[in-house]
Every structure is written in C-alpha cells, then in structure tokens.
Image (cartoon, rainbow, N blue to C red; front, side, top):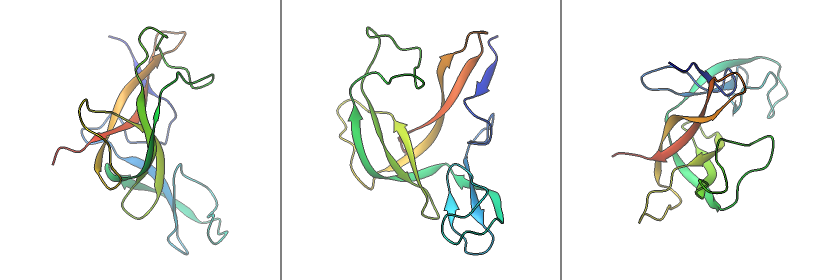
Length: 142
C-alpha cells in the first residue's frame, strides 16, 4: 500500500473520519488565521493557539482555473489529463477565509454562498513514491 502524507503538517487533521482545517486564534482578540500564525495580524499579540476551523464553509468568491499550475504547485496532472477546477475563498465558521481548490460538478454552476465540505484528496506522488494529500472542497451534501 502506498504511504500517504499531508502536503504540509498542521494544515488539517488527517487521517480522520471527518477532517478539519487547522488554524490559529489569538488569545487576546479572537482573530482567526489560516494557515496557523505565531503572531496575530489584528492586534500583534504573540499569544495564539491552534484551533480547528471546521470542515464546512461557504463560497465567498471564486473563479475557474483553466490552465495547469506552474512549479512549485505541480500535481500529477499532464496536459492530456488536466481538467479545469474551481478556486476561490471559502469562509469558515468564525470568519476566516481560506483560499482553496474546489470540485466542479458537471451541470452545476458554483454560486457565492453555497455550502462546501472539506475533503482530503491525493495531489501528487513524490519522488520516493509517497502520495501527497491536500485539502480541497466539494459542494456540500445537504
């Protein structure tokens, strides 16, 4: 079995039955950030803590990525297998907005305010054969 590893430690809980994004929250003013930060961008405090941001958000804004990403964001896709995908900001509970890919459903037009669920997907295989896992979103199953 291929070993799977997160694209970066500390971005999401995984493996988990219901993975969640991980960010930070300022102990003084409550400002949330993703990815987690050591300093608060709102008040400058150096007292933040890791916090779960949840696994469902709403689409805040979006576009379609219709070309293959350049290095260092290369996946295992090739020009022959590449399919356009959604990319946008997903607003998580607590107000933090996360830039992310999201799945496009054939025949469904994404719309601002739609509910999206977090998913963990294979992104690429590294040179040692490990499958690199990343986070993305998909339209929520209501």
